[in-house]
Length: 439
Image 1 (cartoon, one colour):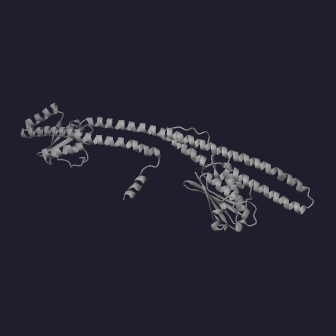
Image 2: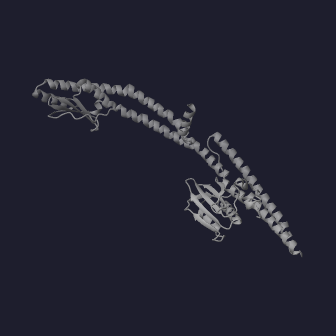
């Protein structure tokens, strides 16, 4: 039972720190106001209302009794005296009846007090209306073959202090909550900024100079994050520089080997060695691409369909068919995504004769589907082929050059954007690569 209640509370409570903090601050203020209001209405307002209503009804009852005992001449004089000297407007209306009691508010303390006192004084021979007039109350009393109509000011039964109290109890509470919102916004903003910076850095985006702010504990966490970010950035830059040096050093002897092969008289041997050198260069390029694809690059708001159309221009139109839904713009690193989609399309056309590319929009993601009509991949190898340097010896991997980095690079790029890649059986009987990128 306790476990179920905890689950319900967790579902009801907001997830964000700002709103949870606001509830912690605002709840005591609201509870205090409710308690004060209940105490005020119970001990002051209701008691004052009862006393004022009792006094008014006694005044009306006295007028009614005097009017009932007098003759016609005296009755007119009594009404004139009451109208002149009291805050009452009394009129006798002959041949009229009491209306149905439709305008009594059963939830109103004013109506309840007035109804109780009138019932004890006049039984069921009365009717009143506290709604139709803003400042007046209308009262009708049954008398012989007509009614006595009485108008009196509403302040005679409703203490005016209630409005002033409601104003003073509400305004300070609202003012305190507004101050709490301003302070909480300032306190939670540094946490939100830190979370956004960590999310961007985790996706491989370039984060500019990050300035710690907020409370001491938040500043410390932000400062440590910034130090970690700088250390990782330095490490990545050093790796890129080292690989650039390796690339230069290795390509120089390979170029010399090519020149020397050109002078060989044994052309068959020269051709085989030249093919080996070209494969070594291709492998070297793939290694470098795999290691460098996380190079710092600014994100841009770009329509993904434009990038796909751009990439497919270099292929023959009969090889690739596009089925692109109208897409909204998305924050991505364009060069990385071009490299990723280029790898996937190259892979599809390397193993098949044609490819089809689809885009679909969901509430939170853009889905890209790349289908080919190649031999496909066994289902038990779907996860393995996304690993670096993994190659299958059968099916798709047979007699194909490469070092097994195409899908791995694509997977790494998509994951760094917060998305994911999955492999499925294609409707073209080959492989389907499903790419999901969040907005």
